[in-house]
Amino acid sequence: SAEGDSAEAKSQARAAEGRANRPTVLFTALGLLAAGLFLAAAFCAVNWATITVPLTTEGHIDEFRQAYKEVSSAQMIREWEEINRSGVDLPAMYQYRVMELDKLAWLRNAGLFFGAGLLAVIGAVFVGRSGRASGV
Image 1 (cartoon, rainbow, N blue to C red):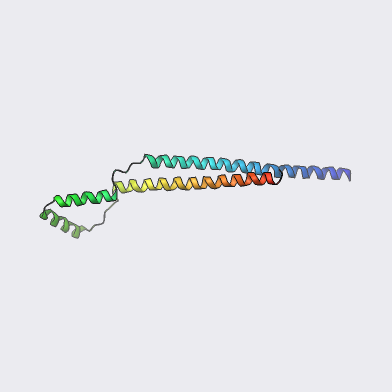
Image 2: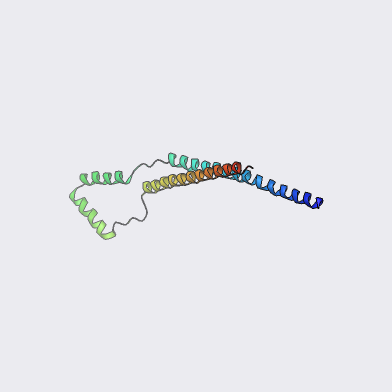
């Protein structure tokens, strides 16, 4: 029975050692995940900051208002006839609008990566504190 007790004690010691390493490994994994997510957020934020949109929708409308003030009545009638003939649908978006949507997408992605990084940090802190609280 002495040999059985020592074998059982060894197996319990190995199991306790495995449980002791688990919070450390999880803490490290969550920390690395958080670092990667923050790097991805920084990459997205840099891309967002480097995109300059030359024109906005409001600016584009203002340009049309100014142009319509300067054209003659005959040109306005031709414009109206063209609109009635072909409609107002555009085959593609204006380039400034594509750039504006791209910039907003980079900002949204930066926010999502940053939020996920914060969740990983909170998880790492929780795992680190639970490892200490259990006496490991």
